[in-house]
Image 1 (cartoon, rainbow, N blue to C red):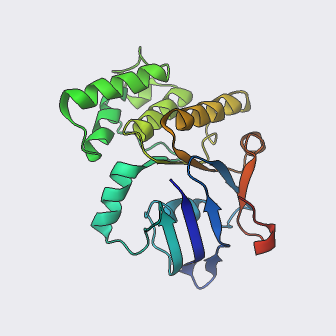
Image 2: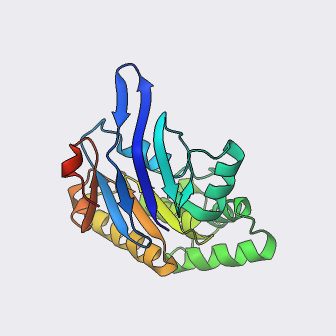
Length: 220
C-alpha cells in the first residue's frame, strides 16, 4: 500500500509547529524515519494511520485521503488496513498472549474460532507457542514485543508501522528484532514504516525518510 504526504503541518503549541517535506513510500517498501529528537518522527507515524489529523496538508494511503475521513472512518481504516507496534506495546495486562492477539483481531472483524486459530498460528510462528496463556508480566521484554507484533500483523494489514521497536531491548537483541519485523512484513506483503534513532536499526534500511531537515535532504 503506497503512502504519500503533501505539505503536512502539525501545530502542537505556539512553540512547536512541525512542517514536513513531502514523501512517498512505495507499496511493499520498507523505510525507516530518522531525524533529531523533537523533529516529529513519532508524530508522523501517528499521522499516517489517522491517530492525529494535521492542521494542513494531505495524507494519502493507497490513494485515499486519510486526513479528511471522519473519526469512525479512520477507526475502520486502522482496524482493517493498518498494524501498529507501539513503543510501549500497550498489551492488556490481565490477558494472556493469545487473548491479547484475539482481542486485536476482534477489532478487525475476525472473531470466534477463526480468531483463536489465527492468533495461535501467528504467535507460534513468532516463537511464542509455549507462552500463549502467559500475561505480559510473565513475559520477557522481547516476548512482549513479539506479542505486540503478532497483534499488529494477525489481521494481515497492508501497512505496518513501528515506533522505536528496539527502545526496550539491549543492543544484542536489536538486530534480531528488526530482522523479525522486516521478515514478518515481507511475509504478508505489507509496506513497513519504522521510526528509530537507533543506529543499529537505521543501518538495516536502504530507504530512509529524514524529518527535521531541508526538503532537498529528504529521501525515501
